[in-house]
Length: 161
Image 1: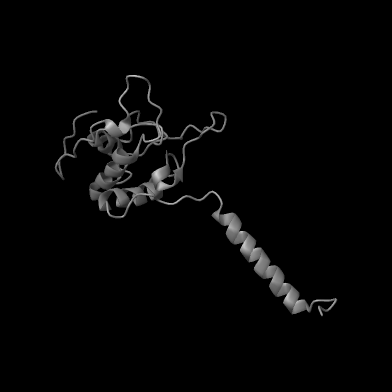
Image 2 (image 1 turned 30 degrees about the vertical axis):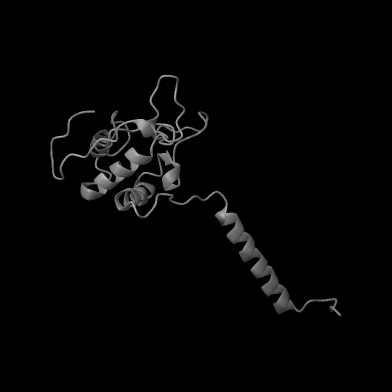
């Protein structure tokens, strides 16, 4: 038989556990994780760095980021390109943008990542950007475009995109 009144400490514990369970469920809603295989070390490391340094302005589902505005009414001046929809190849072009603050130079900081980390982010973006882009008839899908190669490490002169 269940007593009519639950003891106060038991009631407090039950409510606390219920609230904790609810908070855990709600906090998991809408989260997305990095979905790049760890076997591709440079791309995986690049995805981790991208989610840490670029997530505020750029969207790419493979890094679990949602920085770009999806609605023009919500858009802020500092929203970067949505890399799910925008193809970024060849890889040397991506590295150029990282080193020089994008192509317009308006808001993206130059050298947001440097050295080997910049090369890893460039590798990640070039491989995974544009995979959800809609292609027009006669247009080559991003995954079929040449990935290109990175200049030798320490090369100071990159050609313009």
